[in-house]
Length: 333
Image (tube, rainbow, N blue to C red; front, side):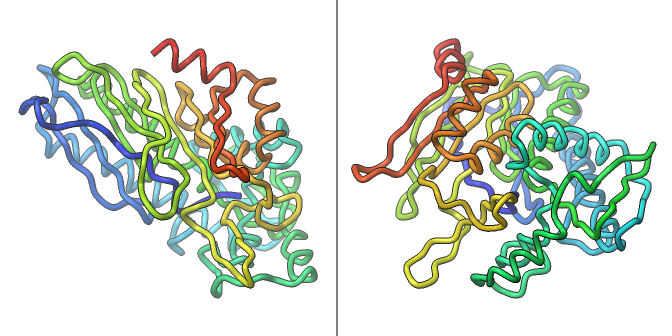
């Protein structure tokens, strides 16, 4: 279900004409990249100090929640046997609480205990290469999956089976929101930030125009825009099946797994984009809707008032369908 490499949204900020008031920095994070463009306020520290504080947040999140480093708090929890408990930081507990809501609302289509399945199919940190597992192997991995077997006891996280957590479907969105809050404390109210493809923008560019981003069309041959959005106070998350997959005997296997079947999704939804004031929520919902697919996902978005744009493969090419909330949100921008 979760993903390490997220579909990249193409930032359309044109630096030409913005003048020296626009500061910019970025670097590697979470196996991908982050970038920030902002307009410094009168009380804003120098860029080096802003970058240092941002990267401190990134380092903290990595130390707590990465499944790609053996010494993270999450990896240590994943290594514990069934019946174990471990004290977890408040951010980790908050993400588990949020994930439980999505898990319950989606009847299990969203599940943060999919690590054994991700590894089995070759998309996880402990994988041994991409492969098509047998039905018996899938059943064995599924026996170690299920948020129903995960619980909190005070400040401790406990597991009734030897499950393993994968927060990659929500951690980037959470990190974006953390950094956005930090920027506010530093007197930065106008910014466009991107963490592994999850974005949030607020305020305006120095010339008074809005920050613009383009939703990447789900094509593998060329990078083109599906739709251009103007953002102010919104987070954006896109999930897709076209950047991280493998093929065997003409069959395509996406990194987006359905925890209920234990296998990659098989429907025709190529990508879904969610807009929300909370980038965490947008991040989780984009994964949830991607798992549900074009029909069930669209119905879920309509029922829950989610601003979502669905792009599906058809015999005549890609077809887009926007939820009512998405149309209203884009029209309001």
